[in-house]
Amino acid sequence: MAKLVITDAEGATQDFPLSKERISIGRHPDNDISLNDKAVSGRHAVVITILRDSFLEDLNSTNGTQVNGKSIAKHPLASGDVIAIGRNTLKYISEAIAGDEDDFEKTMILRPAQLGAAFESQVNQAAASAPGHEPPATGKPLLGKLRVASGPNMGKELELTKALTTIGRPGVQVAAITRRADGYYIVHVGGAAGGQHPLVNGLEIDAQARRLSNGDTIDLVGTKMTFLIA
Image 1 (cartoon, rainbow, N blue to C red):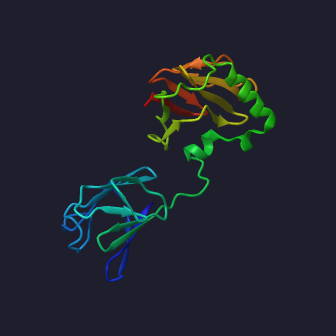
Image 2: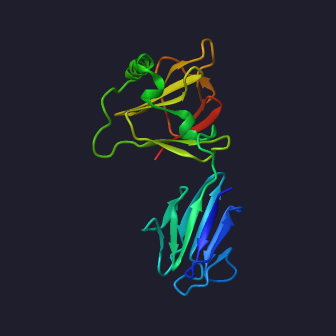
Image 3: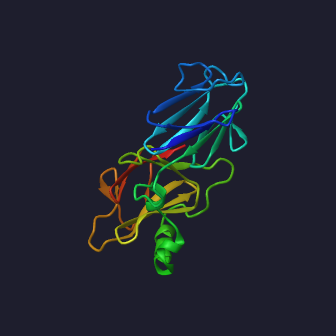
């Protein structure tokens, strides 16, 4: 469970576990974290925790909220972040285990070093078969993203800003999503011999690139994701 280590103006510290989805911070005594400091607004800020992720939001406070020395309105917290509210500091400590298998990006987003030269070449060849092979049009190109729709990482999002994003697990299921001038395409590029290909809206994809539409559901290595156009 994540926690805040609170240090007041006198140097006294206390740990506050983030055991609720919403933790209010302010000068009024009915806040979850009450800070006896005139520089703190009555309703100053709130921390929202969803699964293993916590987000800090300033509630239009008079003197503002800072994270690591920078003023914020909304901010996703990372372990070690130091929040300044008035003369108080609140250090965010996440107890998530490094390398946790439930971490979406660590398990699903593949990089060249993870693929090997031969497999990377296969990915590039398959992706090149997608229609509209020109780079995205300049000016105002489409921007797509994946949102996890099932499992412990539900709600996490990945913006598809690159020309090619490879997702999955080598030896199990791997797909490539390419960003083209006319939209995004997904293609199956590898997996277990004889295994099921990734699904789009419940139908298997194959070596032919398939164009994605807003709201399409992708099933890959047991994770359900929704493709969205921002």
